[in-house]
Image (tube, rainbow, N blue to C red; front, side, top):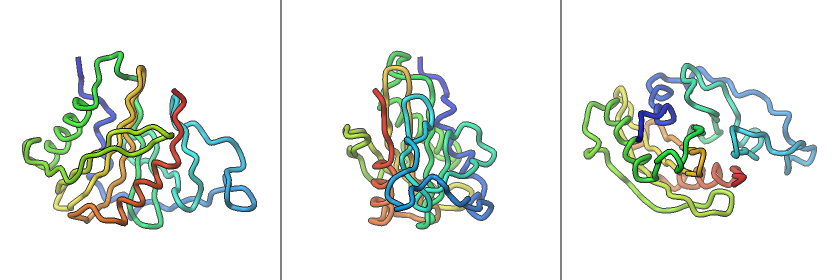
Length: 191
C-alpha cells in the first residue's frame, strides 16, 4: 500500500546548492523580550506547529521542491526541513516503511543500493513531549557528503519528517545532534 511519497523527495532540495542562494529574512514574530512568539505558534501543516523564532530558525523559501512543507536555515549552517503529508498509519504507513523509503530515495540519488547507505545511529527523541523514532544516515549526493538526522512523527491521518542536514559532513557531530534536538523542541503536535 506504500506508494512513493512526495515527503521522501528531500533530495530534490539537496541536489542544488541552495544554501548560497538563501537570504534569511528578518523575523517579526518575536516578542519585545525575545523569549516568546508574539502570536500563537504558526501552523506548519495539519496538526504540526513550529514555535521557533528568528534568528535561531529562519523560515525560508524551499527552492524548487514543493514537496518540502517548511525549510529553515540556521546560524550553524545546518539546514532543517519539515516534510508533512496527509497520509498516516490508517493508510498503511509504518515507521519501518518510512525509514526504508527514505533510504531508497537517497540510494537513487547516490547510485547505490539502500543496504549500502550508512546508518550512523538509531534511537528516539522527544517531539511535543512524546518519544519519536529518529535515525541518522549519510550519503554523498553530487559529490557532496551529507548527514541526515530524521525524526518521523506518524499519526493516524498524517506523517511528518523533521530532518536536519549537515551538508559537507561525514559524521554525526555533537553540534548537529544539539541543533536537531533544538529543532524538535520547537515542534508542537496536536494529536
